[in-house]
Image (cartoon, rainbow, N blue to C red):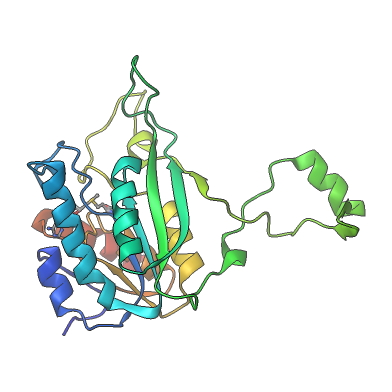
Length: 260
Ligand SMILES: C[S@@+](CC[C@H](N)C(=O)[O-])C[C@H]1O[C@@H](n2cnc3c(N)ncnc32)[C@H](O)[C@@H]1O
């Protein structure tokens, strides 16, 4: 039996074997990408990487409730394979989210520089939580919005007034990466974890796809972002990472927010 609001230090498959079926409301999965920058992200071949990815997907899907949502991070290239696999498992596709990292990683003179990651959003059924009102964003065309707030804009024969909470959230997310945020005088700083996700990004996912006291699962929690954001939004979590040093880091960060 898994203890709620804890971070385990196991291989993902061992961890998932301990989780009861049909328990998680949301799974936020930021797995290895096979980028060969660090040992935990290095596989002998693309085939081996996919075999690993399909194994954790098979182990994970039964853990989601029928009303559950799944978010999977990866490169756009790898996401095409993960997407096909999830479709073959009868998961329901909702969105291909493009995360514009506001950062340039692979500057290239032979092709376009890459600065995006993919977040696949799938659900297990049509009955799922989506709190669109909680993730609205500020309108961009301010002059038009000022005008519309006073008199409304005629749309399909009806007067449309802007929502005071902002516009609907789209599929392209412009959120600065931690790597870019932490640069000093343009220089990359060494971080305790190579690829921490911005809290703002995970916050959007948790707010949209869960309610207070729901259970969020993350079997590759790294620096602890999912656990930290879940806690600060009054959600429960069950998290895991196979690297002891990251589990310690995640627990340290959790203690800091508990002390606040
Ligand atoms: C992309 S990082 C996750 C980063 C995290 N989202 C954050 O915000 O810090 C992937 C994580 O998966 C972990 N990992 C890699 N292989 C694993 C495995 N087989 N089982 C469990 N964790 C694994 C790594 O230690 C790493 O921390």
